[in-house]
Structure formats: structure tokens, C-alpha cells
Image (cartoon, rainbow, N blue to C red; front, side, top):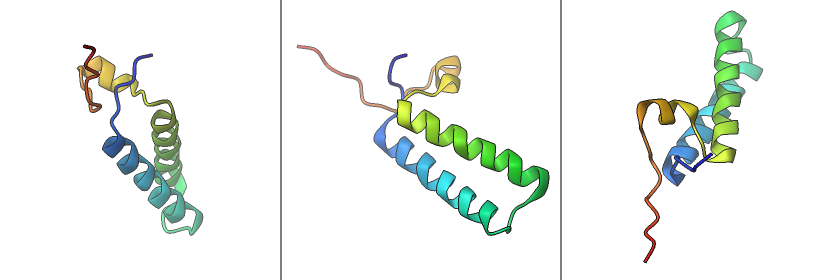
Length: 70
């Protein structure tokens, strides 16, 4: 897996995951919507930790800077 996520993208994903987690565990969101959003939050955290998003590969998106080799 090649890195395809930049630092800004990772930071935003982690912040969104934290917000979703707080909303879920304080019962502001619940039920099916809460479970779906909590699952998305877990996926956000995992993809942020491994610096790779499979959807970015499918759509050809890359948010990390290109490494220049001299």
C-alpha cells in the first residue's frame, strides 16, 4: 500500500471521528444512524493511522505531497 493521504486529511478525519465518538457515547446520536456513523469513525481512524484510503485509489485521489527523488 502506497501512502495516499496527507497530514491535513488525516487530521480532519481524526477530528471528525472524535466528534462522532463523543456524540455517540453521549447519546446525542443513537440507533442505526449512530452505529453507521461510529463505524465510519472507526474506518476514518484506521485509514488515518495507515496513511492509506482505498477509495482514494479507486478514484485516483492523492492528498499527500509527491516525493521528489533527485
